[in-house]
Image (cartoon, helix red, strand yellow):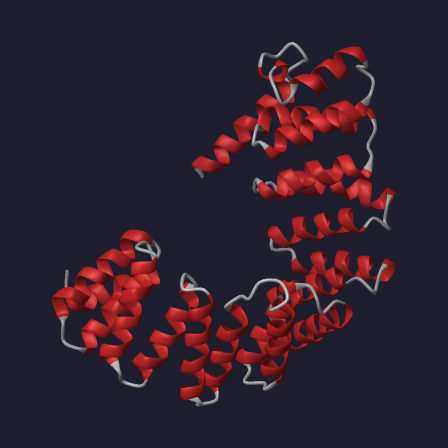
Length: 329
């Protein structure tokens, strides 16, 4: 609530106290060149847009909103609307984004970025059927867009239609197999559903990334698949490969440790979780699972301490609070 009030005050100031070209901040680098251009050509919307975009990138909310709104009032070009609506979305104001976007989407229905931002405005408000309608309109204009199919999967997931979401994600991957977020999302879904297609997809990702920079993610996803189908030795091998690829990749430690814990190898699991918290001493999940392992080893005092550490780094850690309550504070 406090954050919402602060944002509201910022927006109110932006609406009613628009800084002009004599504002001290705007006369300093890196804004001074655009401010000078505005003085010389005050009717050129591009200058307000460029300065507003720069201000937005540097988190000067009041000036950014003022400039972008001024540019739109002078010439409501799609690029201007996209930048300001993106600003609203990133600052938790989907209503403002929707109000700005709706008439422009009607004017430029073929503009995919306008459609995407309107979709996200509805999505962020929890209005999933409306978001799906916008997405399907975008698909009507560009059914070959992997991004449109990826967004459709996101919305369908929110609507609890996992089958249709998977189909949309597969369409997205078929259209663009090089987009990392699509490939990883699809591989994760396959792994979670124990679909062996996860292995082939991860191997393709590994082969592609070997030409650029190896990442630990596909090894971890393979490990999750193997763990899910009961091939623990293969899973541990993959988790070790992930850690060898990037020793800071906490998810691999977590998955490996949990697998060892489920196997009843509590001392080995504790070593893995301890290493994870050495890599990142703010890793709440690591401390929680250290506590679980220590509790299984009857090391109650140490377990209690690590549950407290988990809560210290994640105030909303329900499981850690329940574990601490079980042991008694």
